[in-house]
Length: 130
Length: 136
Image (cartoon, rainbow over all chains, first blue to last red; front, side):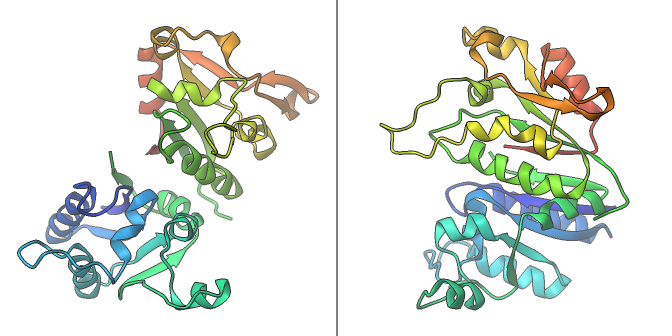
């Protein structure tokens, strides 16, 4: 089955991104396909590379970056939600005249159309949120 | 944009202000309208407050996005399911909600209400009938 995943709550504050991560690993292990993961609302904060959790805790962003690399996952951060919350790639930083970018490897920033497209193309769209 | 037409339902369960869910839900609906899908919206729990008329956010310093609901007809979003029990539990009636209309192009552009009040079990039927449910 082809899954589309929505993550709509922020890392550490909420378990949504952990549950999505675990679901995806299990689904892939069963031979399913995960066509895209769309990060919305505070979920976009999963994609900042400036997060520094305590060493005895999981590093959520690095978990996702590794998972994306191992399975060629498409991790999409909503641009409208990201701009509000201060999450930028280099393109956006240049375009908005900001002095830095903070997006982590393995993530890309794109529009809400990617969420709708995911819903159209996938067999199931599953939201991990509140 | 796509040949596939799926039934999309946007479920709104939260009050319009206090958290960003309602506002960012509406942003998805407006962008999604460009994809020519079969779109419905559902309002239940505190989500019914999103449709109330007379919202004034000035003193709270927040953006009042409630007028956007009246523009949904222009985006061909014309099915707004509102749960009766959620209205009742909050002391609201249909009169407390904005008059949200659309022009029915199949009926000589007659103006019709987009709001469809359904019971809790009716709402379950609406949800069961969808291909994609996005919850906010």
